[in-house]
Amino acid sequence: MSVSHSQQFNPNPVSILIQELRHEDLQARLHSVRSLSTICVALGPDRTRNELIPFIQGEMLDDDDEVLIALSEQLGKAIDAVGGPEHACCIIPIVEDFACLEETAVRDKAVESLRKIIGAIPLETQASHITKLLDRLQNAEWFTAKMSACALLPAVWQKLGDELAMEANLVETLETLSNDSAPMSFLEVLPKDQVATQSVVEVFRKLSVDDHDSVRLFVMRNCISMTRKLPEEFDTLVRPVVEAATMDKAWRVRYMAADNFKELADAVAEGSADGIDQVREFVIPKYITLLEDQEHEVRTVATAKLVDIFRRFPEWKGWPTFRSTIETLNKLVTDQTSLVRGALATTVLELAPIFEQDLTLEHLMPIIIALLRDQVPEVRLRVLASVDKIANVVGVENFHEALLPAVVELAGDKQWRVRQAVLDHIPILAQHLGVDIFEKEMGEVYRKALQDPVFSIRDAASQRLKKLTEVLGQSWAESHVLPDLLKQKDSPNYLHRMTVLFCVKTLCEIFPRELIEEHLLPLAVSAAHDRVPNVRYNACKTLGKMRAALKPEPVNAAVQETLQRLAEDEDPDVRYLAADTLKEGGSSSSGATTNGVGPAA
Image 1 (cartoon, helix red, strand yellow):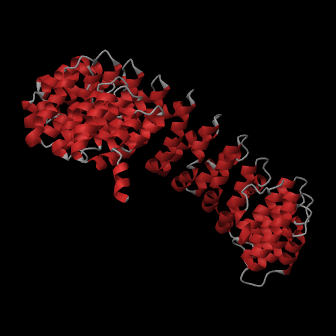
Image 2 (cartoon, one colour; image 1 turned 180 degrees about the vertical axis):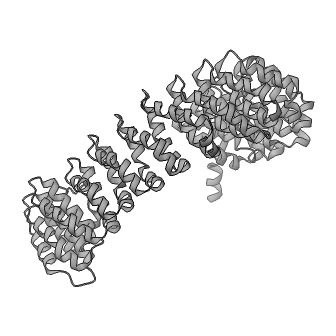
Image 3 (tube, helix red, strand yellow; image 1 turned 180 degrees about the horizontal axis):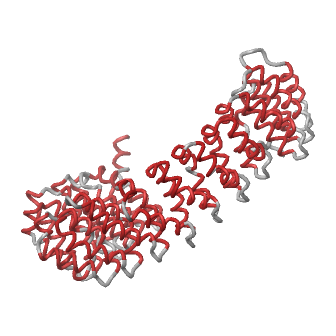
């Protein structure tokens, strides 16, 4: 019986896959393509090569781009499935077809897979497959194939090695492609003696002045490679190209120049004995021009990269260009674009440890204070995100005098996210300032946050209370926080009365038993008599937390009595939670909602 059933049900994996690949639903086809490796294992290497690969090549070139991208990726992983590296060449034709398609994303994924296949093919027996692939792409009619040939050229050269690459005339291929396409940073894989040849130098010069800015985008990468290969030719060959790139009419070219300037400075500095002098006299001045570029995208990326260059060349602080750099940064404070000012905010805070105390106080502190008062909240938030780092650099006294007034001012900002950012840093600021200065400058700021109209601010204030008490001590909480909580429990606004309970729950985690019973328990018991059900509901949660905090000591009678009374409350949600707390010993309080509102408001 089992044999008969087996004979009747013997599905063909290829036919099943074919049906799924022809499915009308895109997601079904994608699922099938992503399961290709499983199907290959079921088929075995021979049937994968002889049945599956031909079907895909014949049937799927016109599918949706998403399917083709997934298929290109899977084929790059199918080397073992077709029998290993010695059979990998059978995948090349189909992936090559994908590398010639018009959609860029499909071509990029196909090229990525071709690189993997090229890397796996054994040179001893199948090097010709690699060179023939490059020839076909190079000589194809459509530019899309030529673009893929450009992208594959470095990988082909690296695989073949210098000797075989020269036999395959890859330099001539490079020259041919440079006439009508856009090679990537091809110089990275060429040996030094080939870079120095007249033909490669001519290609480098020709691409640097190409009419299409999409070609000139890669100029800076090639300048970096040329500088590393031929440092002695920097002044005569590379320098004019770099200078032209920083003044290029296309902003995208200048953007790429700014994005790669640190790597260029590295290559120049390491290339010769006078490399640092060239960085000081040429590279840095050109970089400053990008900080002042007319396009905000260029100014943004140049500002963001400034820290990397200062880290690499801390001696810049003593160079003549340092003064002009600071002047440029001061101009950026009033830049018309908030993206530039936001990048500047992050940059100056990261520069502080490099500049150290004196230079930070003299040059960076005015910029930081100005950015803290920026009209755009995102800029102010960028500064607040790392404001505590400044205290480490300039010291508490200087921070107190120069920066703290601006931080205190932001605590009353009209944007609630800015106010919350100040609260997020209050424990760290308290650690730097100490009890006396904190209470004098920020104590009232913190207590006002407990009555903020925005819940997120009140909630953040109550959550920060634990860390503040750990930093400033229990005596600070007793003398400065508890008196305000006693006043706030009688507030006409029930939201403020609930905030008192949030603070009580937080303090229960760090106060000893005697302080809980003396100061916190009366607040919770008082709230249990509140006229608003939500307050009573939160009082119940607080008492549950308090009960858990008082264990393993005998449960306080007031806690037990209040919970028992709440178990008979007129509100059903309060009754349920109180009964559950009595039953579970307070364990249910951990499942409270974060906003303090019960199931039935």
